[in-house]
Amino acid sequence: MSSDTSHGQRGQAGVMSAPAAEAVDATAEAILQLSGLTRQLGTLALPEGTCDTAPEIVEAMCEALAVPLVFTAPASDRTKDFAIVALAAEIQREQRAPALSEISLSVAAERAHQRLQTERRTVREHRLPRPDTTRLTVVETGPTDAPAIVISLPCMLSYRLALPWLAALGHRYRCVVLQGRGSGEPIENAEDFDDRGYDMQAQAGDLVAVAEELGDAPVHVMGICGGAAVALAAAADRPDVIGSLSLWHPDLELGDEVERTDHQINLRALVDLGAQSRETGSWIRDKVVSGPMTGVPEGIGPLVVSPYASAELFYRYASLTAATMSWDGRGAAKQLRGPLLVVTSEDDNLAHPAASHRMAQLVDGAQELTARRGSHLDAFRAIPAHVDRLVTFLAD
Amino acid sequence: MPDRYPSRPVHGTDGSSTDKVIGEILAIARDVLSAPSLESDDDLADHGATSLALTRIIAEVHLTLGLDIDARDLSDRITVGALAQVG
Image (tube, rainbow over all chains, first blue to last red; front, side, top):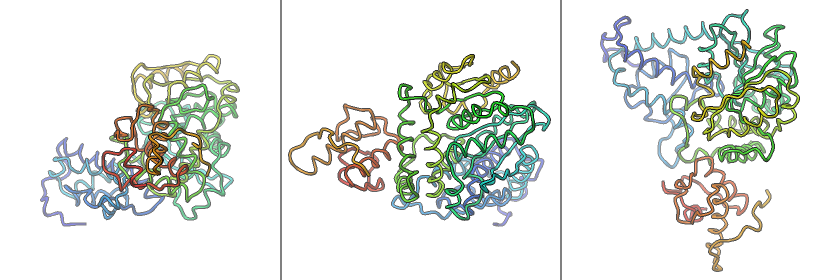
């Protein structure tokens, strides 16, 4: 770590300006969004030049947050990996905040450390071993004696995407997020992933195991985007464990007559190919990351791009996602007995709302909330209208 | 891997292999982008090509024609003609 002297003592704790505090927090979040990747892959190399404004502060904060990053990846166009570029984009943007220049390295590091400690007190994390030796990562917040909600996210995506839901629901529910198989453990022997399995039965079994661990009372399950298929399968199979279900901008296969977006069609084609073998998966990934990646949302980009961070991660993502996208949910929908809430927006251009409408038709008594305007990302944002509707649904 | 477009009409065939390749790629790109009016010198981005769509086009071209297109060889303006040239 570099000397502190260039920043002087202006930024001692207690005198940090609000913009500086905001800048440190935003940079810390950008770094923490890579913590899942570094846990799996070890030290992550981001492009040279990422930290063009505040390299020493970023370095100090990475150390404080225990996220091992180096900035040595090739930056020339011929060798550039655009997934890595996208993973670095949040840090690059946040470290350019002018307010960061007001504070010293030690103050930035201390605030980042405090933020991490606060998060660890609020968001508890533990491992759940499965019979196939997978160790699932489960995070939760809220009172342990409160009614439980389990969130099923798209395959391979970090629990951090669900933090807005944890913050919105954690004061009155025990809110639990399953970070699915293949994404939570360090990769020691890559083929373990294949040996343990990744089909729908395995994925739904994981969700049921998390729900069972929470006690005897049936839980509510939220299936978000690609996590909807696993949530639906688990809820249909184990109504004794999962008492009710909500699906948020779900990506579900419900028959050829149910319209899909171009994104769904393209993604399905690519994950089907990518799941064929590690060699094919690596080839597909290389094509995706050899040019700028479109549609990466600001603020959560690293969380969305993380399955493309390495060939092995993409192979796992493709294998798991091919299983969920090809699973026909119609049988489970007809089998579903508990209450169902389906939420989407008419203009969702990632997961077509037609599947939500079809689900509501297939399940007697299903409630449907369809915004005229919205965004697929609303599924992750815990916007007040959604939180209110969910709370009302659960109270009913 | 199977050829998924064995009987697709070839655009602009004049007997040259280059035109045939362009026609094959054009057919794939039109299909992936749901853009029947796409022409070989159109910028694919103007027809809604995302990075996933472009990757799917490249993958389909590989499956059908055996060409391995490296997007790093392309300029910012990506056309079917350019894909044929670097393939």
